Amino acid sequence: MTRVAIVTLAGDLHAYVIRKHLREAHDIDAAIIASDSLSAAGGLTWANVDGPEHTLPTEGGGTVAVRDLDLVWWRRCHGRPTVPEAVTDTQLRKLVVKDNRAALRGTLLAGFSGTWISDPFATERAQNKLLQLSVARAVGLTVPRTLVSSDPEDVRDFTRAHGGTVIAKTLTGLLGTSLQAGRVTLDSLDDDAEITVAATVYQEEVPGTDHLRVMVFGDSVHAARISSAELDWRLANDMVVEPVGLEHRLSDALREVTRRLGLRMGVFDLKVRPDGHPVFLEVNPQGQFLFVEGMSDMPLGAAFATFVADELARSPRRPAPAL
Image (cartoon, rainbow, N blue to C red; front, top):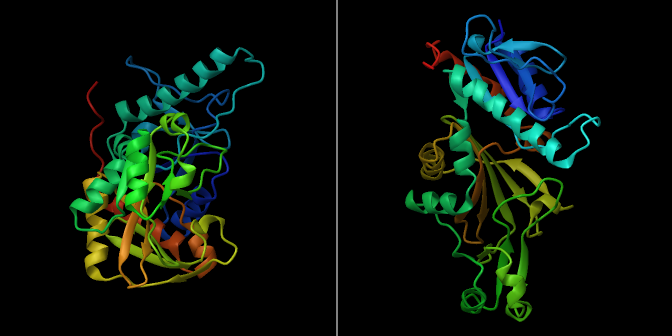
């Protein structure tokens, strides 16, 4: 019987790797539900009358019964969905996407009472960078001095107060667009119309070439040091990745951030100053971690599968929510 579902995007390597580890190491079957391939897949059913079973379509053309699930890994649900070419009206295509997403989430919220990794509402809330910075600071982590603003004078005053150069980045990502952080100078901030278009994150630059990618899976913490001279290591060609131990105080603080955000996992980015002090930058509730395994031989896939198995063992089957 399938007890675990992985809600993600079609072709997600993380889903395939973790499913393999769950099968081979823990004898646990996991169904993959491609949240971006619901249109024309069939197999999604929910009803408040006797008869129809509440089901969701799985990759490969099968279905999984919601009542059989004890754990859902809510990994990815905001990809670029496929819609049949026969649906040509632009607004109707948008409606198809919205209805399928609502049906997927609603079927689980109404009929699933097991364990989430992590709860969809907590995941969405935790993606807000202003909230992340506030929670991180509240638990004692060092965070960069930050301004989020669309006011030209406030932006220029903040930049002037930090030596005339700050880091600018967006509040959210955008599928299919590379929007990396970059340095901006006071001289470049002369266009009021450009600044007022949208609220933007402005931060003091944290010096150093060492970054930390920290994976918090429940109570376990796995950290890697990423060395790169690039401001954004994701675009670096000189990246070196190696496992590293963390001080207990830092590990505890990252676990506490995860807990306060209502998450069961989180992938953190920190930067290490030249004096060795770590500075919190952000946390991704469902961040990528297998690239760290590939570049450092850290057994993160196996560690995550063990985390899922432990969560499953601590989550006895409960009655479905009352309708």
